[in-house]
Image 1 (spheres, one colour):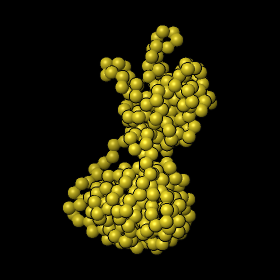
Image 2 (cartoon, rainbow, N blue to C red):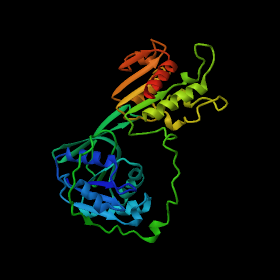
Image 3 (cartoon, rainbow, N blue to C red):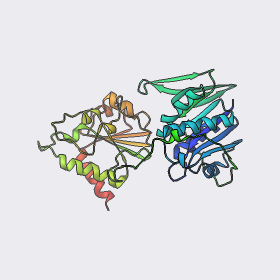
Image 4 (spheres, rainbow, N blue to C red):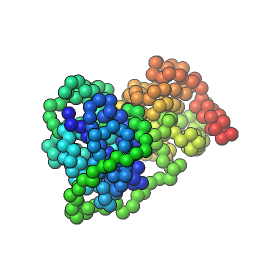
Length: 336
């Protein structure tokens, strides 16, 4: 097996957390591997992994690779794989690589598998695991086809702890042409820190259900209070916001939360996050919704119904209480 760990830099020249996780995934195979990095300051980024135990380091760098772009990223990835003579490529499942590496795999005649969750060396064979059918079926398989490109999901492997050093990377010419640079990033539009509710690296996933929009104990709806309570908690805790399908599917005629969209949906038809902890409020723990929680390490729920779905073994702790009162108290304590 001739293995290369293929990575990319961020706009500031550093490596993303997912890159260090991919290094851990490769190291546990106990086979020699090379490191290839593409980006504006790729050679300097190789020094961040100088003590990773790689047999060689390759860098494809330059202004053309400073920004994510399909054509230039594909050209650089192909050049790095060929320079290393690799027949197995392990890379992080980032937005940048999820877009570019399938194209690079096609150019080198490689098989490609995405969302890989496990890598195991069995003699000369390599066995991988990944989820199918909305994370309901875990498949384990191997391939005889080489090269083989594997994109490893984030949040599964512990990030490799790197130390300072000099990697002495070999700079590789990516062969980028003017035609490859036709697409240009002219700017970035992003919400403010308070407006950003999806935070993959947050330690806590806070999920709001449709119960926040229903009539409460006094017979009235308190949508403004609910919105203030939820956004207040997110601002104080830095948690990532999730939602049940019933909440994001509310009819357009209904008054809904402006900070909530289908992107926040967690479940069978939504996302499957990997936060260390999760807190569900005002949602009943229906099976399709709970599917999205299977990779949350510790699950807790607040619900007024002691017989809700969360109480049927789907949560580690269930607080039978009014979420409005509980979260208001939590916000007050966090504000002290």
